[in-house]
Image 1 (cartoon, helix red, strand yellow):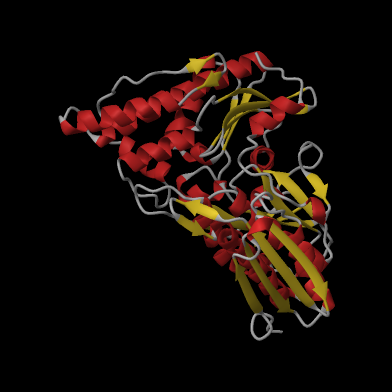
Image 2 (cartoon, helix red, strand yellow):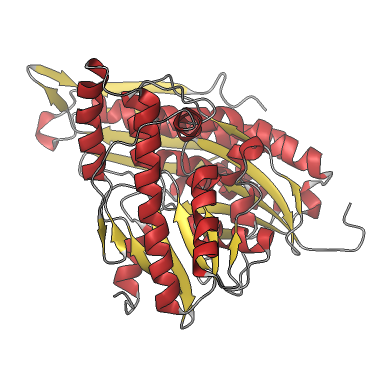
Length: 109
Length: 353
């Protein structure tokens, strides 16, 4: 099982419809090649909610042994700059934990 | 291993800058207890994100060596424990996530453990203390606790920062090394102190306050050191004497209040031999049959084991009402916003003077 390699597709869509208020979005999926493993990762990571639900939304789903994750975040303003800081922070923390979960499955399955 | 089946718990603790994985049998025997500490450069404290990354790197190697050292396989494990809180959110999450995943893979139940109760229970298991007044002193907590009317109750605590936090932050002012821990290096330097510098002494009933003392000594230190009026060693010595005298005073008051004769010191600051000595002197002063219990992890050569993976696992479920079996969905973490004292004050009828 090498879930991190081929099928992890990233799609960062910046500044989509500004009217929605959720300026940044990010989609990716990881193919675990096993419904059971994808379910374990899902159940492990679904417990912790996003810490700032008014700034970052996360949705997860499973199909065909693939874990699909969708992030949406509002923009962060730092003086004149518009940053995807909220998205970046949530995404990176999430991926760290997803990798840990994946390593646990690889080692103790 | 485990020929005659005894229940075995594997515990994960990572609420602060140390991560540990412990394997404990039902009778309290510690089968293994590997751990790793995140040590920051002198003058710096540990921040949540960096600390979480440290834990991420070490949790799986630690689990492997915990199982190997204990000579068990996942099949021998009966339950998985993790520190639910209080602590720093991101580091706590690492243990929680690991336990959730393992619980599904191995088909084992999860036990969520309160960090503070685990400190006390581990201390009782290791020392055999029956019903002590507990002085819980660490980098994040300073409390005098006793078991009364069916619950652990807090009889005195800090009203601002923890004693360990006060020491750690003063170590940063002096840019002492954080290896093995700032408190240890203050203790060593304090042994060379000769001159006592008067510091504020802040006991308020059964509570204590340290932040004013820290501000005072931070300001004084720069001034006095510049004028060569004292040495860093004198400052460490004076700070320790003042802080520990306050702690011993409120402990003694709680003992009198609860009519208990024994004291158990738990938490990282309990490693400090000067604090241990002052507490033993209390015993002599009282001229009674007091027992002063100090877990053997509170000794210099095992300085770090006080904050360790065996804590969650060593919890005695009969007494620790805070150790709850958690379904996976309930296996979340409670971060530092919920201080032990705050939670307790909300939830119990306080018996505080």
